[in-house]
Image (cartoon, rainbow over all chains, first blue to last red; front, side, top):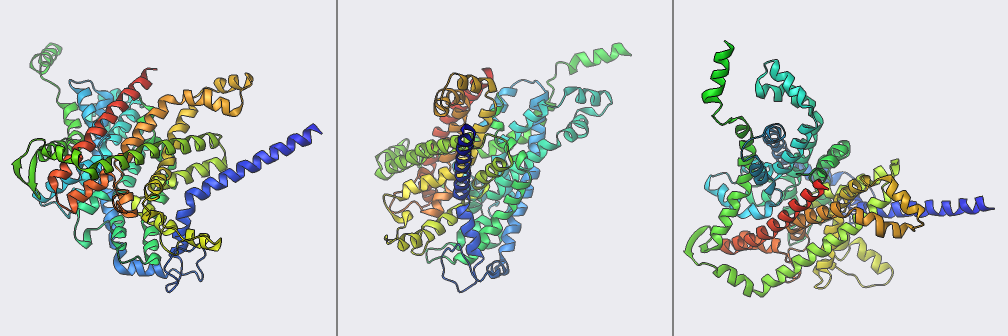
Length: 280
Length: 300
């Protein structure tokens, strides 16, 4: 008697749980699902969102790619990969000395870098436009890469110095005795041991740079320099929107980040929570 | 041999500062200063001048600041931003805590759901904005199809004076829920098992346990999460820019949108710079709070 009642409560609790989980999943994914299904509708369907596209068609994707969206994706990729390189370069070196060396003014310099976490693209967008126009850097990859890396660098440096600390200092010492020199110790011994940390930083840099819109919108002007999200923005005019092609382009823009995120989720989570879980 | 070695090392080398750590730190430092110190100097300077596009015309002292504080539209911007940030962060923390508690147990299902909740956080804001526009805006949106089928009049929250700002705030909180959940999950993982069990033995109900045991223990990480989200929400510009463009009228015009408009639509650089000074002042205040919290967390 008691066992069956117990079973019944357990079963209803499990059902409530499942229902809750389903609702959460739906709330998070509903807009994504709508964009995906709308992108799959055939041309000539009503120009509105639909959950049930029929007949299914990839025509919107073909049209978008024929219309040159590949170029915008390529621009985004170039900016993202160059940003990874710059962020890795600065965060490896700065993170390493913060973790391993004591020197005058270290805390002040570190503090100056971490202040960068507080300021976003928004507070720099007007000055950087001026800077770019004075140096003739507007509408180039250079300014986009510099600006993107600058906003990702503080978190990357903070994360990597913590990661380097978790690597035994005896490794460096052994390398120094072997005569690698101080940089050699970093490059040949510490970096190979820090690979997972470098993956995290690269992923943060890629996602940050790929998703950046404001700077890319302001600092570029010619169509050939647009990144994918900025190109999406220009798809949406005041005169109306062609939802089929637009959602197809949105899906294409989202896919690279989504795939990397799903593959490297653990690295991403570790990087995101780095700011909160390590003390100064 | 050894003697000369030591002597060579002691004088003059020993007195010299070792430049190695500075050299390694320099690229990162310069890069970050380029995006922080340079803009700060720039906006403070421009905020004290009257300008013709990017040309400084005349020193005007605090006139730009005085203008802003007498500008009703600016006060509206501040109010909208306060709602967007404070209500948004409160919602985000509540959603995040609910999900963290629900998805705390390690299983196949919770792992999948945790990933799903993070998807909006890694998606760029133009895509998020256009998806929500597709879902809720427009005469033939799925929302309106649903409303019509039950005999209600169609709506478009993005052009409604009353609904635009709340809708925008909720969508932005939805976007960041995954981040709040992650932080709070990290906090939950740090609560010792014995604490939970002790509360259970004392006969506390699940809700009491959450209210009196779990939430107080999550306080440090909650504070860090809240301050981080506030800084992040102050900087949100693209999502509202695409969703509502600050409209209808100025109903959703946040500080960020006003700044963008003054800088890149009206080319009133003095005003844009003054707005940026406000933004930076708020952000630095929040950052100072953040450092204190993280430091306190490290000590306890």
